[in-house]
Length: 157
Image 1 (cartoon, rainbow, N blue to C red):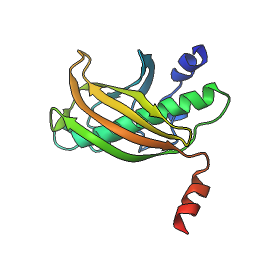
Image 2 (cartoon, rainbow, N blue to C red):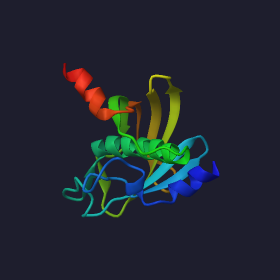
Image 3 (tube, rainbow, N blue to C red):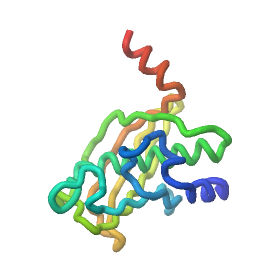
């Protein structure tokens, strides 16, 4: 667990398979209870910023990247590497507001509900403000893919 805490202090780009400009979360914050936590600060420089903020539906990607950062941190803590995963589906997405506003700081939490040996996991994710008010939430299904090229080749034939 201490290794995981230390790894979470690394720059977010070291925990994700993504590269700029598609890194949408700002930092990993480690564990909070049984959830992995990340932060996002909404600014005019945020990807997908339009008008006065970022559309709430982008929160799905904030959730997926929080899950990916958790997976990346676990991989590094066990002596492995950051691997590519895929978002398979979303259920019950709700958002309290249509837009995350300029200047808003978001906490994104992801909790594993179901983990299967084949790499498929179901996660309950929520986005809240620093005061704890839930702004968006969803149940997402993800898969860890050991070898993304092989996985995609198998699906294309």
